[in-house]
Image (cartoon, rainbow over all chains, first blue to last red; front, side, top):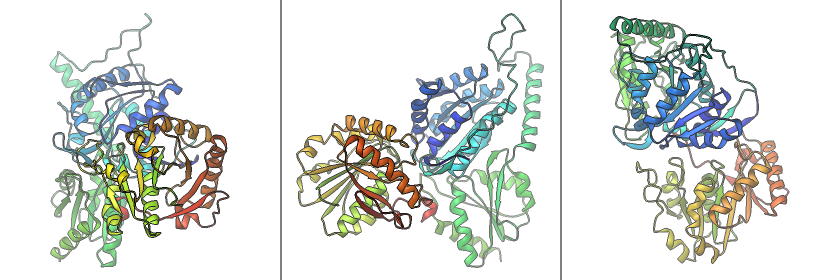
Length: 354
Length: 222
């Protein structure tokens, strides 16, 4: 491992992408993620990268489509309203089976909303914000170190499955500073990109990158192939952290930075004799359903804590499948649940379960 | 310490200007001076002086914030109240300026008022930040900030840290780089800042020490 530095989340995403071999970035500025493009704009000229501040988010995602079709490691980043604008492009990228990395540093919605932190884009990210039957791998880091490691991994996953991978963090993760230790060398997986459109040199048949299929049977074949690929990803790429779950009375689910608040609450609850565990999905899709099933018979109940009005809680309920109550606590508008608020909710659930 | 009336803190993005500014204001108030602090940050949306407004106000410090700080309005506008800081000469003033040349532009708006007053333009350095790890890189950032602020940096601050992982050797390593910048540009080192526990065992050969308490916190650091 190399030297330790103090970095902002947004800077780390940019640095990790560069280390992962990304040399193409297209985006449009929006708070609270603009430092990503700021950093890339500063660094790319000296390493031969191509940075374009596009005229809009729609243009940027289509530039991503183009660079990915040519076999490049490519990234775009935005925040919630900008990610909404990219949805059409994401659906096309899924249909054309292109590898790309998309960063969403989430702010409050709906609409123009506000610039403060939120997890309100969970549904959009994991249920497919664009049209059609498609999935993206969605990674939700909770620290700056993990943000670095998962950003590098996002490029590998994208290439491995020819799929779009989203790094999703709330505004806090993008704006906060923590220490990070970079590896001397990144593990960049070799990917077969013989499908890329880079010119035939009159030596092979044309490669075609498209998401339009005129013949319905052929389109169904594509969909079947995509679904088969998604089932493989569900088997191989689930990432989850469990903390204090064995012997817990209540299990809290939380992702991203919220999980860090919950870990403090777990220590506070322990002092009152309430044993609380944490399941932190690191991949929001594929969702760690098996982990929730394993602990589905926890004595009291589940509680999902989120920076939204209740989104991941639905996937927790599906996984727990009615075996226990799944409660929810969340704040919106940029408000972050305090340790005390979460502890009060845990006390209430614990009391009612006895 | 606390010699000048207007104390402007500039620096590279993320060098710790807000933490240093807030602690400088607190120490100045504790030393018995009438103290004001103004948040000049038009760059950062989160983690700013506004986070600790009540704490500072309770200690008698006059806090001037941008009208929309910490709200959902993404408009970097300074408050008209800033003008009063240049008229109430019985106050000592801290200006917490946003990072980089972009942030420094806000302070250039008040250049005429500042240069007529008794002022210090500090440049805060953390050599553990990317793009300010070497004397060469730091000199480059100083030049761009001076250009944007339309004023010269008059004092350097060594704020080298890795948050809670900081210890005296890291601070000393940063100090040596800051001293190189100081020699090269002929700008004196005002002080080295750090949290009490991380400063243990560090004695600077030049400048004072500012012992800080962590003021700008994350949601799980309550």
